Image 1 (cartoon, helix red, strand yellow):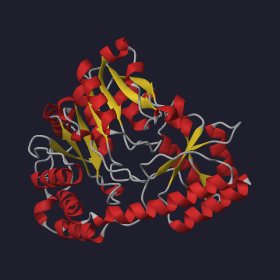
Image 2: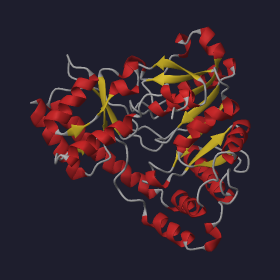
Image 3: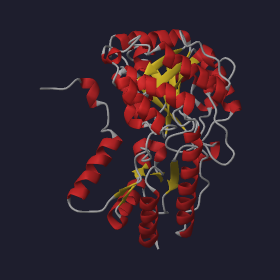
Image 4: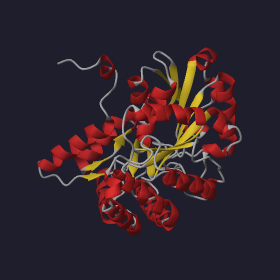
Length: 388
């Protein structure tokens, strides 16, 4: 039975291939340490778990979710309050917020809500591979915008050809950035608003790492920039700040026309997020802010260990100030695939090859800090021995 033609355009999903590679090695008895996937190992805060258990026992929550496609108003109100506290952003929970089954879902629904078949969608290179898949599934044409270390991994709008910008109807951006760890500035975001307004480009600003910043960097929302709600939306998630990756709870906020369009896509696609998870999400947003500071301290400690180890073996670079990833240049004379393979074969440590994130990801690998301290220390010792 043949599959749809659109699926032929989509490359194999990076993390599925990595999981399969790890599983095969472990089945052969190899002790593999994976630093390739960003999935926090620390538990979800206990009050969140307790609220899930309480709400799950209430038969009223066993029916279809409340306000199915939009999410519970109580959850959307909690999101609105959180954005006001954390970022100084005011959004109307009734018309400018929608609950998502994780922000990755929001990428798909944004394309379906905005992009017609054949229309151009801008995305950065390197960039999160799921953006390209979302664009292709929605029938759009992805156009890669290079981001380079000398520019702080920020796209240079003046370098985007005018004829491409005129064809584009949407753009994906993601800061703090996966995979590079780069952060955006308010000045850059103001330029983004002006660029998007000039060409009628809808911005999908994917911001799930908003709270994971270091070295004096402050959390920043695209929506805090004047005019941002006129040109786009922001996606966010409870996955990273509250260790809730498996819970699949996120949100889209911003332009009410785009939110309404995404709502229409969702009402014809799914039946929303389980009420009990939304109630638990409210507790996370309202009561568990201290978990963010705790996790930042853990990631800061791990980040220091990795940077010290890499310096010791001769890999020196200036790290980005966001996310729990490190975008690491490979040793001279090796490609990203060759270096990732070397670490896998010689140290049994898995990292993500930069080439998987696009043409301009070549020459780098991505390290994730989402493993326990003892396993990270073991991985660093193995890398130290392999490279010395």
